[in-house]
Length: 462
Image (cartoon, rainbow, N blue to C red; front, side, top):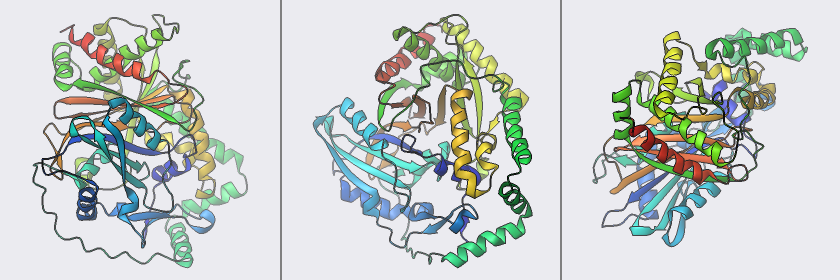
Protein backbone atom coordinates (compact mmCIF):
# COMPACT_ATOMS: atom_id res chain seq x y z
CA UNK A 1 0.00 0.00 0.00
CA UNK A 2 1.30 3.47 -0.90
CA UNK A 3 2.37 5.75 1.94
CA UNK A 4 -0.26 8.48 2.29
CA UNK A 5 0.60 12.03 3.39
CA UNK A 6 -0.79 13.06 6.76
CA UNK A 7 -3.12 16.04 7.11
CA UNK A 8 -0.24 18.12 8.48
CA UNK A 9 2.20 17.12 5.75
CA UNK A 10 -0.26 17.75 2.94
CA UNK A 11 -1.22 21.11 4.43
CA UNK A 12 2.28 22.35 3.56
CA UNK A 13 1.52 21.56 -0.08
CA UNK A 14 -1.80 23.38 0.00
CA UNK A 15 -0.33 26.37 1.85
CA UNK A 16 2.16 26.89 -0.96
CA UNK A 17 1.63 29.87 -3.24
CA UNK A 18 4.04 31.91 -5.37
CA UNK A 19 4.74 34.17 -2.39
CA UNK A 20 4.99 31.35 0.16
CA UNK A 21 7.18 28.45 -1.04
CA UNK A 22 7.02 25.79 1.66
CA UNK A 23 10.53 24.36 1.61
CA UNK A 24 12.98 24.34 4.47
CA UNK A 25 16.65 24.60 3.70
CA UNK A 26 20.07 25.51 4.83
CA UNK A 27 23.35 27.15 3.91
CA UNK A 28 26.40 25.09 4.87
CA UNK A 29 29.98 26.33 4.51
CA UNK A 30 32.78 23.77 4.25
CA UNK A 31 36.57 23.65 3.96
CA UNK A 32 37.54 21.08 1.31
CA UNK A 33 40.38 18.64 1.98
CA UNK A 34 43.69 18.99 0.17
CA UNK A 35 42.53 16.35 -2.31
CA UNK A 36 39.61 18.63 -3.23
CA UNK A 37 35.83 18.27 -3.34
CA UNK A 38 33.93 19.04 -6.54
CA UNK A 39 30.54 18.49 -8.17
CA UNK A 40 31.32 14.94 -9.29
CA UNK A 41 32.40 14.03 -5.76
CA UNK A 42 29.14 15.44 -4.35
CA UNK A 43 27.02 13.48 -6.85
CA UNK A 44 28.92 10.29 -6.08
CA UNK A 45 28.51 10.85 -2.35
CA UNK A 46 24.74 11.40 -2.65
CA UNK A 47 24.32 8.38 -4.94
CA UNK A 48 26.09 6.25 -2.34
CA UNK A 49 24.04 7.59 0.59
CA UNK A 50 20.55 8.33 -0.78
CA UNK A 51 19.38 4.81 -0.01
CA UNK A 52 19.45 5.82 3.66
CA UNK A 53 16.53 8.20 3.00
CA UNK A 54 14.18 6.45 0.55
CA UNK A 55 11.79 9.41 0.52
CA UNK A 56 14.30 11.37 -1.56
CA UNK A 57 13.65 9.11 -4.54
CA UNK A 58 9.89 9.43 -4.22
CA UNK A 59 7.44 11.95 -5.65
CA UNK A 60 3.89 12.92 -4.77
CA UNK A 61 0.98 11.33 -6.61
CA UNK A 62 -2.42 13.00 -6.34
CA UNK A 63 -5.64 10.99 -6.03
CA UNK A 64 -8.22 11.54 -8.80
CA UNK A 65 -10.99 13.81 -7.60
CA UNK A 66 -9.00 14.35 -4.37
CA UNK A 67 -10.88 11.50 -2.75
CA UNK A 68 -8.03 11.22 -0.24
CA UNK A 69 -4.69 12.81 0.56
CA UNK A 70 -1.88 12.26 -1.99
CA UNK A 71 0.55 9.36 -1.66
CA UNK A 72 4.31 8.94 -2.00
CA UNK A 73 5.42 6.78 -4.95
CA UNK A 74 8.83 5.84 -6.31
CA UNK A 75 10.03 8.07 -9.15
CA UNK A 76 10.82 5.65 -11.95
CA UNK A 77 12.64 8.43 -13.83
CA UNK A 78 14.70 9.59 -10.85
CA UNK A 79 17.78 11.54 -11.98
CA UNK A 80 20.15 12.57 -9.20
CA UNK A 81 21.87 15.15 -11.43
CA UNK A 82 18.59 17.07 -11.73
CA UNK A 83 18.49 17.53 -7.97
CA UNK A 84 22.23 18.10 -7.44
CA UNK A 85 23.25 21.36 -9.11
CA UNK A 86 26.34 23.49 -9.48
CA UNK A 87 26.88 27.22 -9.05
CA UNK A 88 29.80 29.57 -8.45
CA UNK A 89 30.59 33.06 -7.21
CA UNK A 90 33.13 35.36 -8.88
CA UNK A 91 36.37 34.68 -7.02
CA UNK A 92 36.87 35.48 -4.27
CA UNK A 93 33.19 35.17 -3.41
CA UNK A 94 32.10 37.27 -0.46
CA UNK A 95 29.67 36.52 2.35
CA UNK A 96 27.28 39.10 0.90
CA UNK A 97 27.29 37.40 -2.51
CA UNK A 98 26.71 33.99 -0.95
CA UNK A 99 23.70 35.25 1.02
CA UNK A 100 22.28 36.91 -2.11
CA UNK A 101 22.59 33.63 -4.04
CA UNK A 102 20.92 31.76 -1.17
CA UNK A 103 18.02 34.21 -1.18
CA UNK A 104 17.47 33.89 -4.93
CA UNK A 105 17.53 30.09 -4.85
CA UNK A 106 15.16 29.94 -1.90
CA UNK A 107 12.67 32.17 -3.73
CA UNK A 108 11.97 29.46 -6.30
CA UNK A 109 9.43 26.72 -5.66
CA UNK A 110 10.33 23.06 -6.08
CA UNK A 111 9.02 21.03 -9.02
CA UNK A 112 5.95 19.09 -7.84
CA UNK A 113 6.47 16.46 -10.56
CA UNK A 114 9.75 15.27 -9.05
CA UNK A 115 11.09 14.39 -5.60
CA UNK A 116 10.83 17.57 -3.55
CA UNK A 117 14.45 18.48 -2.87
CA UNK A 118 17.48 20.19 -4.42
CA UNK A 119 21.07 20.78 -3.36
CA UNK A 120 23.53 23.27 -4.86
CA UNK A 121 27.31 23.11 -4.71
CA UNK A 122 28.65 26.67 -4.64
CA UNK A 123 32.31 27.20 -5.60
CA UNK A 124 34.48 30.29 -5.75
CA UNK A 125 34.30 31.30 -2.07
CA UNK A 126 37.21 33.08 -0.40
CA UNK A 127 40.00 30.98 1.14
CA UNK A 128 39.10 28.04 -1.08
CA UNK A 129 35.89 27.28 0.80
CA UNK A 130 32.77 25.82 -0.75
CA UNK A 131 29.12 25.94 0.25
CA UNK A 132 26.08 23.70 -0.02
CA UNK A 133 22.60 25.21 -0.30
CA UNK A 134 19.82 22.70 0.39
CA UNK A 135 16.07 22.84 -0.27
CA UNK A 136 13.62 20.21 0.99
CA UNK A 137 9.86 20.58 0.96
CA UNK A 138 8.26 20.88 4.39
CA UNK A 139 5.87 18.05 3.45
CA UNK A 140 8.85 15.69 3.78
CA UNK A 141 10.47 16.75 7.04
CA UNK A 142 9.96 18.78 10.19
CA UNK A 143 12.57 21.03 11.81
CA UNK A 144 14.54 18.31 13.56
CA UNK A 145 14.42 15.90 10.63
CA UNK A 146 15.73 18.64 8.34
CA UNK A 147 18.95 18.63 10.36
CA UNK A 148 19.01 14.81 10.44
CA UNK A 149 19.07 14.86 6.63
CA UNK A 150 22.76 15.59 7.10
CA UNK A 151 23.20 11.92 7.96
CA UNK A 152 23.04 11.28 4.22
CA UNK A 153 26.18 13.30 3.57
CA UNK A 154 28.02 13.84 6.83
CA UNK A 155 30.60 11.72 8.63
CA UNK A 156 32.30 11.91 12.02
CA UNK A 157 35.77 11.75 10.48
CA UNK A 158 37.43 13.04 7.31
CA UNK A 159 37.37 9.47 6.00
CA UNK A 160 33.88 8.73 4.59
CA UNK A 161 32.13 5.75 6.13
CA UNK A 162 31.14 2.77 4.01
CA UNK A 163 27.35 2.57 3.72
CA UNK A 164 27.29 -0.51 1.51
CA UNK A 165 26.04 -0.96 -2.03
CA UNK A 166 22.72 0.64 -2.89
CA UNK A 167 20.72 -1.56 -5.26
CA UNK A 168 17.49 0.31 -5.90
CA UNK A 169 14.66 -0.72 -8.18
CA UNK A 170 11.67 1.64 -8.21
CA UNK A 171 8.33 0.08 -7.36
CA UNK A 172 5.74 0.30 -10.14
CA UNK A 173 3.71 3.48 -9.96
CA UNK A 174 0.09 2.77 -8.97
CA UNK A 175 -2.49 3.35 -11.68
CA UNK A 176 -5.66 5.40 -11.37
CA UNK A 177 -7.77 2.38 -10.36
CA UNK A 178 -5.35 1.43 -7.57
CA UNK A 179 -5.33 4.99 -6.24
CA UNK A 180 -9.13 5.24 -6.19
CA UNK A 181 -9.57 1.79 -4.64
CA UNK A 182 -7.03 2.69 -1.96
CA UNK A 183 -8.93 5.87 -1.12
CA UNK A 184 -12.28 4.04 -1.01
CA UNK A 185 -10.76 1.33 1.16
CA UNK A 186 -9.53 3.96 3.60
CA UNK A 187 -13.05 5.40 3.85
CA UNK A 188 -14.37 1.89 4.60
CA UNK A 189 -11.82 1.44 7.38
CA UNK A 190 -12.45 4.97 8.69
CA UNK A 191 -16.18 5.73 8.37
CA UNK A 192 -15.79 9.18 9.93
CA UNK A 193 -14.10 10.31 6.73
CA UNK A 194 -17.29 9.55 4.82
CA UNK A 195 -19.31 11.54 7.35
CA UNK A 196 -17.05 14.57 6.85
CA UNK A 197 -17.38 14.26 3.09
CA UNK A 198 -21.17 14.03 3.22
CA UNK A 199 -21.48 16.93 5.65
CA UNK A 200 -19.36 19.14 3.44
CA UNK A 201 -21.20 18.00 0.34
CA UNK A 202 -24.57 19.12 1.71
CA UNK A 203 -23.05 22.35 3.08
CA UNK A 204 -23.77 21.56 6.70
CA UNK A 205 -22.71 25.00 7.94
CA UNK A 206 -23.39 24.19 11.56
CA UNK A 207 -21.12 21.14 11.61
CA UNK A 208 -18.37 23.01 9.78
CA UNK A 209 -18.61 26.01 12.11
CA UNK A 210 -18.36 23.78 15.16
CA UNK A 211 -15.15 22.26 13.82
CA UNK A 212 -13.63 25.68 13.20
CA UNK A 213 -14.67 27.00 16.61
CA UNK A 214 -13.24 23.87 18.20
CA UNK A 215 -9.92 24.45 16.46
CA UNK A 216 -9.74 28.07 17.59
CA UNK A 217 -10.79 27.06 21.09
CA UNK A 218 -7.92 24.58 21.19
CA UNK A 219 -5.51 27.33 20.28
CA UNK A 220 -6.91 29.64 22.90
CA UNK A 221 -6.81 27.14 25.74
CA UNK A 222 -3.37 25.87 24.80
CA UNK A 223 -1.63 29.18 24.29
CA UNK A 224 -3.87 31.49 26.34
CA UNK A 225 -2.80 34.19 23.93
CA UNK A 226 -4.77 33.44 20.79
CA UNK A 227 -7.95 34.92 22.27
CA UNK A 228 -6.46 38.33 21.49
CA UNK A 229 -4.72 39.18 18.25
CA UNK A 230 -0.98 39.57 17.94
CA UNK A 231 0.17 43.16 18.45
CA UNK A 232 0.78 45.43 15.47
CA UNK A 233 4.29 45.04 14.12
CA UNK A 234 6.20 45.84 10.92
CA UNK A 235 7.15 42.15 11.12
CA UNK A 236 3.73 41.56 9.54
CA UNK A 237 3.53 42.82 5.98
CA UNK A 238 2.32 41.93 2.51
CA UNK A 239 5.09 39.79 1.05
CA UNK A 240 6.22 39.11 -2.50
CA UNK A 241 7.99 36.25 -4.24
CA UNK A 242 11.59 37.38 -3.68
CA UNK A 243 13.70 36.96 -0.55
CA UNK A 244 16.70 38.32 1.32
CA UNK A 245 18.84 36.16 3.59
CA UNK A 246 20.69 37.39 6.66
CA UNK A 247 22.90 35.59 9.16
CA UNK A 248 24.30 35.99 12.66
CA UNK A 249 27.20 34.08 14.19
CA UNK A 250 27.37 33.57 17.96
CA UNK A 251 29.05 31.26 20.48
CA UNK A 252 27.17 28.54 22.37
CA UNK A 253 29.25 28.93 25.55
CA UNK A 254 27.99 32.51 25.88
CA UNK A 255 24.40 31.27 26.10
CA UNK A 256 25.41 28.61 28.61
CA UNK A 257 27.18 31.17 30.81
CA UNK A 258 24.09 33.39 30.85
CA UNK A 259 21.83 30.42 31.62
CA UNK A 260 24.11 29.25 34.44
CA UNK A 261 24.16 32.72 35.99
CA UNK A 262 20.45 33.50 35.74
CA UNK A 263 18.66 30.14 35.41
CA UNK A 264 16.24 29.00 32.78
CA UNK A 265 17.26 27.19 29.61
CA UNK A 266 19.50 27.89 26.65
CA UNK A 267 16.34 28.35 24.58
CA UNK A 268 15.20 31.04 27.05
CA UNK A 269 18.47 32.87 26.45
CA UNK A 270 17.91 32.55 22.70
CA UNK A 271 14.43 34.10 22.96
CA UNK A 272 15.76 36.87 25.21
CA UNK A 273 18.43 37.55 22.58
CA UNK A 274 15.79 37.76 19.86
CA UNK A 275 13.65 40.05 22.03
CA UNK A 276 16.51 42.50 22.62
CA UNK A 277 17.49 42.43 18.95
CA UNK A 278 13.92 43.09 17.79
CA UNK A 279 13.64 45.99 20.23
CA UNK A 280 16.73 47.68 18.80
CA UNK A 281 15.62 46.87 15.25
CA UNK A 282 12.27 48.60 15.86
CA UNK A 283 14.07 51.60 17.30
CA UNK A 284 16.41 51.72 14.30
CA UNK A 285 13.31 52.04 12.12
CA UNK A 286 11.88 54.82 14.23
CA UNK A 287 8.97 52.64 15.36
CA UNK A 288 7.28 53.58 18.67
CA UNK A 289 8.46 51.33 21.51
CA UNK A 290 6.91 51.68 24.96
CA UNK A 291 7.28 49.68 28.17
CA UNK A 292 4.28 47.56 27.15
CA UNK A 293 5.38 46.84 23.58
CA UNK A 294 5.56 43.13 22.77
CA UNK A 295 6.23 40.92 19.76
CA UNK A 296 4.50 37.55 19.70
CA UNK A 297 6.75 34.71 18.61
CA UNK A 298 5.69 31.24 17.58
CA UNK A 299 8.33 28.78 18.74
CA UNK A 300 7.90 25.36 17.06
CA UNK A 301 9.48 22.32 18.67
CA UNK A 302 9.68 18.73 17.52
CA UNK A 303 7.70 16.47 19.86
CA UNK A 304 8.65 13.20 18.21
CA UNK A 305 9.90 10.72 20.79
CA UNK A 306 13.54 9.64 20.51
CA UNK A 307 12.43 6.17 19.44
CA UNK A 308 10.59 7.75 16.53
CA UNK A 309 13.50 9.78 15.18
CA UNK A 310 13.90 7.41 12.27
CA UNK A 311 10.28 7.93 11.23
CA UNK A 312 9.26 10.19 8.40
CA UNK A 313 6.64 12.92 8.56
CA UNK A 314 5.82 15.84 10.81
CA UNK A 315 5.07 15.84 14.52
CA UNK A 316 5.51 19.33 15.84
CA UNK A 317 4.27 21.32 18.81
CA UNK A 318 4.61 25.07 19.28
CA UNK A 319 4.45 27.80 21.90
CA UNK A 320 3.16 31.32 21.49
CA UNK A 321 5.37 33.67 23.51
CA UNK A 322 4.98 37.42 23.92
CA UNK A 323 8.54 38.76 23.78
CA UNK A 324 8.98 41.87 26.01
CA UNK A 325 10.61 44.12 23.42
CA UNK A 326 9.54 47.17 25.47
CA UNK A 327 12.05 46.19 28.17
CA UNK A 328 15.65 47.36 27.72
CA UNK A 329 17.26 45.59 30.71
CA UNK A 330 18.68 42.24 29.48
CA UNK A 331 18.29 40.54 32.89
CA UNK A 332 14.63 41.51 33.16
CA UNK A 333 13.98 40.41 29.57
CA UNK A 334 15.49 36.98 30.29
CA UNK A 335 13.52 36.68 33.53
CA UNK A 336 10.23 37.45 31.80
CA UNK A 337 10.92 35.06 28.92
CA UNK A 338 11.92 32.26 31.30
CA UNK A 339 8.77 32.77 33.37
CA UNK A 340 6.58 32.67 30.27
CA UNK A 341 8.18 29.51 28.87
CA UNK A 342 8.09 27.78 32.25
CA UNK A 343 4.37 28.52 32.61
CA UNK A 344 3.70 26.95 29.21
CA UNK A 345 5.67 23.80 29.99
CA UNK A 346 4.27 23.31 33.51
CA UNK A 347 0.72 23.54 32.20
CA UNK A 348 1.53 20.85 29.65
CA UNK A 349 -0.10 23.03 27.06
CA UNK A 350 1.21 24.17 23.74
CA UNK A 351 -0.19 24.99 20.37
CA UNK A 352 -0.36 21.59 18.68
CA UNK A 353 0.51 21.50 15.02
CA UNK A 354 -2.73 19.61 14.41
CA UNK A 355 -4.63 22.56 15.89
CA UNK A 356 -2.71 25.05 13.78
CA UNK A 357 -3.80 23.35 10.56
CA UNK A 358 -7.24 22.32 11.81
CA UNK A 359 -8.88 25.13 9.89
CA UNK A 360 -7.63 23.43 6.76
CA UNK A 361 -7.82 19.87 8.07
CA UNK A 362 -11.49 19.81 9.07
CA UNK A 363 -12.53 19.56 5.44
CA UNK A 364 -12.19 16.47 3.27
CA UNK A 365 -9.23 16.58 0.87
CA UNK A 366 -11.36 18.16 -1.87
CA UNK A 367 -11.61 21.35 0.24
CA UNK A 368 -8.33 20.92 2.08
CA UNK A 369 -6.49 23.29 -0.21
CA UNK A 370 -8.96 26.11 0.41
CA UNK A 371 -9.07 25.48 4.15
CA UNK A 372 -5.30 25.49 4.53
CA UNK A 373 -5.12 28.85 2.81
CA UNK A 374 -7.73 30.17 5.27
CA UNK A 375 -5.59 28.88 8.14
CA UNK A 376 -2.57 30.64 6.69
CA UNK A 377 -4.51 33.90 6.67
CA UNK A 378 -4.97 33.63 10.43
CA UNK A 379 -1.22 33.51 11.09
CA UNK A 380 -0.90 37.29 10.97
CA UNK A 381 -3.49 37.57 13.74
CA UNK A 382 -1.92 34.91 15.96
CA UNK A 383 1.80 35.78 15.89
CA UNK A 384 4.35 38.19 14.45
CA UNK A 385 7.41 36.02 13.87
CA UNK A 386 8.54 32.39 13.90
CA UNK A 387 11.66 31.45 15.89
CA UNK A 388 12.98 27.90 15.48
CA UNK A 389 15.88 26.55 17.53
CA UNK A 390 17.22 23.14 16.48
CA UNK A 391 20.22 21.78 18.45
CA UNK A 392 22.97 20.27 16.33
CA UNK A 393 26.04 18.16 17.14
CA UNK A 394 28.81 19.73 19.21
CA UNK A 395 31.67 18.10 17.34
CA UNK A 396 33.05 18.56 13.80
CA UNK A 397 31.40 16.84 10.86
CA UNK A 398 32.67 16.14 7.36
CA UNK A 399 31.17 15.65 3.90
CA UNK A 400 33.39 13.68 1.56
CA UNK A 401 36.38 14.78 3.64
CA UNK A 402 35.35 18.47 3.59
CA UNK A 403 35.03 19.90 7.11
CA UNK A 404 31.73 21.56 7.94
CA UNK A 405 32.41 25.04 9.33
CA UNK A 406 29.00 26.76 9.57
CA UNK A 407 25.34 25.83 9.08
CA UNK A 408 22.55 28.39 8.73
CA UNK A 409 18.90 27.20 8.58
CA UNK A 410 16.31 28.68 6.20
CA UNK A 411 12.74 28.65 7.56
CA UNK A 412 9.88 29.36 5.09
CA UNK A 413 7.74 32.47 5.46
CA UNK A 414 4.00 32.24 6.12
CA UNK A 415 1.68 34.69 4.45
CA UNK A 416 1.99 38.10 6.09
CA UNK A 417 5.30 37.27 7.82
CA UNK A 418 8.18 39.54 6.81
CA UNK A 419 10.95 37.42 8.38
CA UNK A 420 11.47 34.02 9.98
CA UNK A 421 14.31 33.35 12.39
CA UNK A 422 15.97 29.95 12.46
CA UNK A 423 19.05 28.94 14.41
CA UNK A 424 21.18 25.84 14.77
CA UNK A 425 23.93 25.14 17.26
CA UNK A 426 26.95 23.26 15.89
CA UNK A 427 30.45 22.56 17.17
CA UNK A 428 30.44 25.40 19.70
CA UNK A 429 28.67 27.96 17.51
CA UNK A 430 25.08 29.15 17.24
CA UNK A 431 24.23 30.12 13.67
CA UNK A 432 21.15 32.21 12.83
CA UNK A 433 19.49 32.22 9.43
CA UNK A 434 17.09 35.10 8.70
CA UNK A 435 14.78 34.36 5.75
CA UNK A 436 13.08 37.64 4.84
CA UNK A 437 10.85 39.23 2.24
CA UNK A 438 12.98 41.30 -0.11
CA UNK A 439 10.83 44.44 -0.04
CA UNK A 440 9.55 44.38 3.55
CA UNK A 441 12.95 43.60 5.14
CA UNK A 442 15.58 45.56 3.25
CA UNK A 443 17.40 45.91 6.59
CA UNK A 444 17.60 42.21 7.45
CA UNK A 445 21.39 42.54 7.85
CA UNK A 446 20.78 45.16 10.55
CA UNK A 447 18.73 42.60 12.48
CA UNK A 448 21.51 40.03 12.09
CA UNK A 449 24.05 42.43 13.57
CA UNK A 450 21.72 43.31 16.44
CA UNK A 451 21.37 39.62 17.34
CA UNK A 452 25.13 39.41 17.82
CA UNK A 453 25.10 42.61 19.89
CA UNK A 454 22.25 41.30 22.06
CA UNK A 455 24.18 38.16 23.00
CA UNK A 456 27.05 40.41 24.09
CA UNK A 457 24.63 42.53 26.16
CA UNK A 458 23.31 39.44 27.97
CA UNK A 459 26.85 38.20 28.54
CA UNK A 460 27.74 41.51 30.23
CA UNK A 461 25.17 40.71 32.95
CA UNK A 462 27.11 37.63 34.05
